Image 1: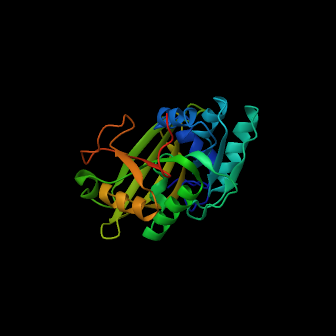
Image 2 (image 1 turned 90 degrees about the vertical axis):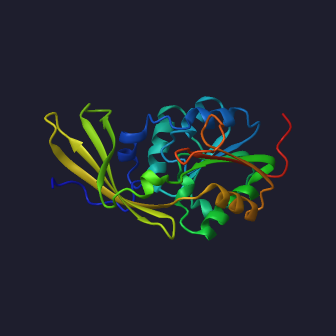
Length: 264
């Protein structure tokens, strides 16, 4: 295998490497930006990463702050924000132990970040901390993941190409592979991630390897988690277009209110 930088613990340790793949990724962007614009108050972007959602919010004039556990992601965010003339307030912290001195009209957890809570205790803690940081009538919005039959019964430990793009500076190919295994009892997906940098001839010149684990959640399980965390009203959709969650290939989009939703 071609030599490369040392392995990182997770795909989120190197914010610059992450941005090569996902800086322009628009998954859920319009949905969260629309919620932020209509929030009518301060917004918190949990698992804000390198600013994929937070920076467009700043550019739209929204009072938004960010939180992320990965210092490398926040460092890139700050650099990008400064280049745009912003100095956002961001916090390095675990979402399950969120403790800030402010309440928000909207808290959002984009891009499946909630599934990095690997135990029921951490799931409930994250939801509870978010609810406690919402203004009365404030909204928590996030997307999550559950596998359909095609995913969960696929052969394990098979290296699959997940993404192919071009390096934003060199224009050369970049590929992301995921080798998955499952603990179906604990509802865990283990991923070994390889990010390959190629030369103009298609040869791999470096490989960046990392590992991560996520826990999937089903719809009725999510409802129990929300209820346990103290939410009294929520809606669960199958996509960012707010269609009903009816198919195993759907996404899971959650909106939950702290008390009654604010009057429109």
